[in-house]
Image 1 (cartoon, chains in turn blue, purple):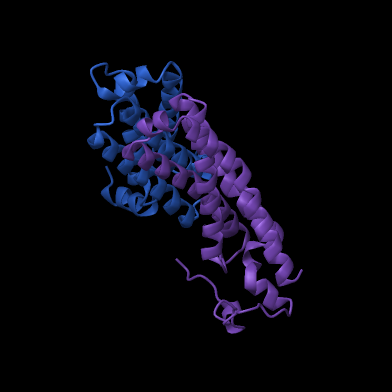
Image 2 (image 1 turned 90 degrees about the vertical axis):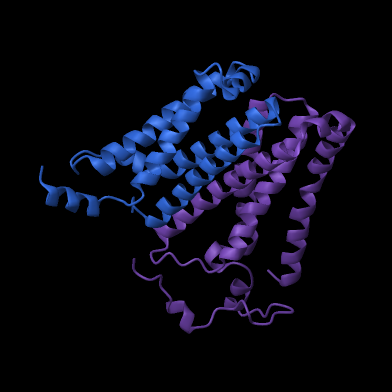
Amino acid sequence: MNVHRLAARARRVSPLWALRAYVGVSTLVTVYLAAMADSSLNYRALVASGPAGFWVAGVFAALSLVVIADVVVNDLLPERYHLRWVISHRLWLFMLLAVGQLGMGLVVVRYDDDAPHLLARMLADATFAAVTAWLDVFRRDDQ
Amino acid sequence: MTVRQLLMLVSIVTLSLFPPLLVSAAQAAHAFDEVTQRLTVSYVLVLTFMATLSGSAALLYRLRQELRDAGDGVISRPWLFVSTNMLGSWVAAVLAVALAQSQNAGVWTEIGMVISASFGGARVIEAVAERYFGPMSNMGRERLVQRGIEPRGGTGRFTRDEERDDDTTPER
């Protein structure tokens, strides 16, 4: 393994890739807990919200996977691999993930108002996603 | 367009927002006890944050267009630009919540209504502002000054100096 080549690539990639990866993985974990872990409060809240909740969870899981694929392909793989469409639509991806986290928080709060610890985590993740969208736009990667 | 006409137009736009707000508020007040039980502090906090994020998405979308099209990316009136977007977002979100609560909408319906109303409200108010005040980079007092009209009560604080027209954002 050529360490110098790896270091050169690390200097070339966007420093925001780790933040984008965190937002994607965190949203995926939240969706997994809500849709699969039947002992979690998220799951009980999602069930109580009706069948639409599982459709919405599926959409957000797909969006999270797109964000993770964006990081892997556009930032970590060699430059000949790219997903240009995702780069130009990162604003919508991250804003949707942000409001999706808040939506999950709203569902949990409506189910059980005594869950501020879960709410705090979702508010923090939503903030991270929104800040990532802002930083990405001002970095002007797609221009 | 004179300053008097501009103020009249702003008044008409502002007043036109109130009838639907009052109707929705009246519907919500009809079921006031039930609504207040559902609208806890945490619930309102999340809804406010959600409306703010939706409004900021509309704002960010427009900012991206400006950064792309304006070359140097200078936005002359960011405070006015931001305030029109966020005001539209919050007003529309209040309407959406009042409507959803009065209709006993499901939680996902309410979320969808708040998100779409906040985003749409921000875009509409921004479009209305641009319709009557001109493009964002020439908004408000600056546009009047450029057209040779002295704004009433102006201190000159918001008029752009000739030398500032050459401003460019620093290279990154």
